[in-house]
Length: 241
Image 1 (cartoon, rainbow, N blue to C red):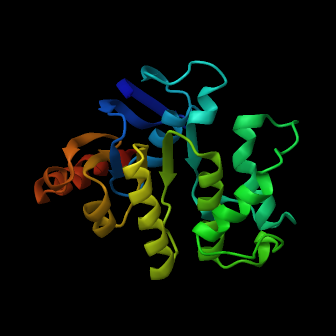
Image 2 (image 1 turned 90 degrees about the vertical axis):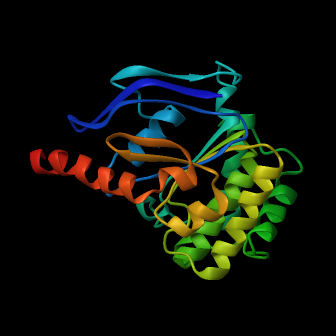
């Protein structure tokens, strides 16, 4: 269980998330939605532990409070913000998912190549192990990042716009992965703009506009009234920026 209590986060000296409280239950599938500039990515990074809150607390109950916690939480950043110019192969990127389990300086386990190959098969990229990521399409690169998540095999999966710039076939692969994670009891928290995907795959939704607008069952949170409240809540922040 991940519990947020009065979480406030700063980004470049500006309040990006303001006094957010709530609970992500174990095994729940939760979307985080809201207008651009609503603080969604900042909140996700705070949950991951890479953007410490300015105030408030984030308790990860049931997860190890040691370095082992990093094997239990996987963060998928926005693919568009990642540098692909470095000459690294698809297999090497996917294999990075094993690092939280074995450490940075340890050698890959004997079955690593098989796990990497299986993950690439699962996302529809069989045989692409030697390809450099800089030669991939945006959709293919996103699938490589999904494969890395499969190798990491975490209990809590944090996703930042995982289906941005992907085609319909890639989205179908992603929906199958979500269904697998739901069946195996993973906790999934995803920043999304695709409301159809939210309605189809995420029973729970957090609507954010720097402050919390609503948190609960998706159909309730996605009401016209809440959407209007989110737009109105963000206007003063943008005017002051």
